[in-house]
Length: 118
Image (cartoon, rainbow, N blue to C red):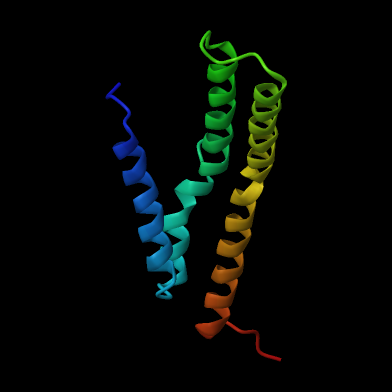
């Protein structure tokens, strides 16, 4: 595994920022959905990854011998774990994308003249 540095993480957040800017330019909906789809994958998407990262950080801090054992640190670790659960709850966003794709597909079909005749 290559070394993880603050620069590599910063590059990832810059990519997300670029995606946000691009989406603000009103791209084609099919392309927009395709671009964000990996972010909301049910198993590997951003909510799941961020939740796992927060839990791993909490565990690393809790188990490290140099981290003081105080009520304040315990509270902060608990807050990290709570945030992890809140992020994990967002894993269902992939269903929203599925529904949007279905709606866009339906709207696109009727716009192309496949409306029913009376």
